[in-house]
Length: 478
Picture: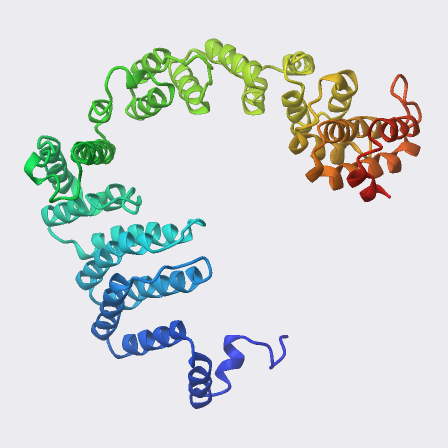
């Protein structure tokens, strides 16, 4: 049982309303955030209407603010925004959905002025507005405004989406918009597409603040922004309406051959029960010179092959995908579909393929995560000369995992990093290299037979001979 002095709601209730009120006044003194929160709670206790007035005043104040929000003051801003959003959803929406919807729109309109004066390198402020967009969709469904009016409000909002705050707006509003609202919104967006952005007359270039070339450049930027808005909005509307062909129409023939876009199209065609067309788009994809194969393209092709009952082709493709990138997901899926005993033989063949893979560290990562630690150790010992000591993000965890059972392999992984660091004179890594050398010394007594590998004392002596003048390294070890 918790002590009566433990800080929890039940124990605080025992202090009584009068004492708690005094404490809240004391605690809020000097804290603008705490005072605003208390005023908001008091307004909500009076009526939803009073809470709405309080939120409206605060939103107006935030919209007028000009001071820059640094990383130090960002937390207070986030807390303030969350308090206003919570008041809209909890205090106002249940009693007056229409007022809550109006306040939600005003809240979303804060995004542009807030981002203009805010350091949001953490992305936390953006997260608040993404949450608010979801809240807007929920309240719109409850408030049930005329679909046409809601579509017009959404269209206006999408025109001010410079920071991505409305990226999910159409999806969030789809239930409230319904078929009629979506059709009207589509009409508005298509209307915007039909009206090109005009270049200001030459006589007005200076008046609008541009030089002779600046006006044309500004026009190009505005035209690109308009095209992007139309493209993204029509894709979202097509998805909301289940219009696969409308979605495909937003891409020209060349774009449809890009692997990631082909995968997006294929996913939607599969959902519509059009597997043959989905496979066609996937197979027509064109890969660049570097031949990077996006995982979503692989998934789309596998889904289409399975849907068409082409199991053998799907299995062959899974194996090819695994052999190209050593993706364990594909190998597990391949083995799962094999019969008893066949999977054991296939796994052995796959491990042999991994051991000979051209990129040893990619193979090592696979073996560590499969896991096949005995093979990971064997790979290091057989291909030690190929290990890139600069890849500490792979070799360090490999040494840690292998140290207990395979100290020789762990030692070789550490030596690769030590040798690279000293040879390349990476002074910022000297402390790590010294620690690695100490770890090698600690593991040396556990190694019964170094075989053709030089023992630790010989290796350490060679380092001292070849890199003895790198005092910044040896000082860490000594």
